[in-house]
Length: 184
Length: 122
Image: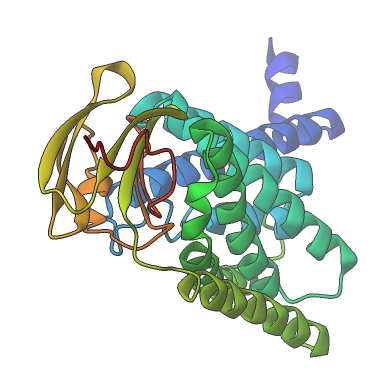
């Protein structure tokens, strides 16, 4: 019995590996929860300009941080799980389709820009914001079967730049201040 | 922020500005409000005639279309967000009011589109 306890208490190599996995899972769970809460906060913010789809994109904070400090698959996973959970809890299938289209196109563009290694995080975020709205408009055209939603493109293009800039600046500050051990 | 960032951001702004210019100066006064539900034409209403139309959208949702003084607006709706109501009045060609939950699109068109007849004489 004694030897058992001793064995458990001793931080063996395999034990280290296990806690590593546990903390990795915990961190991703935490980030998904944070993204979900930010989604909810965002859904509580009234729309300022009466244009559907115009929003700040608070959850992109989490996606950007995951993309820069964890990995692309982690960021993608957090984004998809967050969208599905938000749709199931306080949205609907309809909002899931729009969020997925915006989220995936924006993620793809941000990933390409980031991988190129030539652009600042704020630039990556701004371009992601623009393409999030472009993705939503594309789905709206398909769902509604008409091209009239493209009239919203100019406003949503500019609001995407503005929202992306705010989120990018905040994300850059957060990433700079996170300890090196974050995500390791 | 490097030179490439500035260039990409400038390009994004330029495209945004071009979209604005393109969409703003391409609008003439409209003549009819065409309503579509889930992509299918639902009705077409003359902007010169003041009227109120109840639109039955997807899943039993309703939107109340009001036409007054040559402008169309949605004054009441069953959707939760009421974005269509907040979109206000539209009167220029290509302008639209969109209710995503009910899949209702109100679009302003010119005079010549899909009018069954102009005048009945005799």
